[in-house]
Length: 198
Image (cartoon, rainbow, N blue to C red; front, side, top):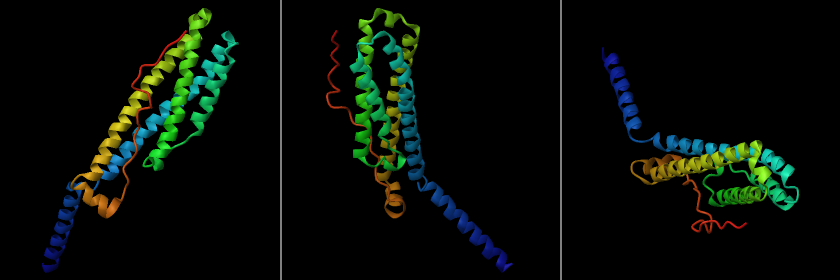
């Protein structure tokens, strides 16, 4: 009977330690880190969707606006640069890499804005169903990008806060040693409304 009680006590002690660890926040840091990484994957997904739409948009505009070669070349070059700057989940704690990625995406956004403004000079293009469908898809994608970025910012804020609050800060110090993740910063001049000229 003595062995039975010793084994029962050992099993009870293991169960108590397991419950203590489960309730003390040990899993918070990896769980929130993975949530932030998943949100980042959605940001990348939406940027890729936009990049995939651009060749079709450029080809549609090209048929109508042959003299707008500089704008079309600018969009193509900005797309190439935006798709060449890569950042993955392992680099999310490097603000400089995130800034490079964001700058490339912002350049593409500006080039797309100029391309869509060109359509104002071409009434036939504005009534072309392919162009209107692509323009609508791009506008929807820009909204999805904004939502994905907002979700990522919220997940990163939650993760970074977890790294600094009790009891998770103990696990951070003793076990995980994660760095806070970087988040998006507003583009310089974003507080001013864009100027539209025709």
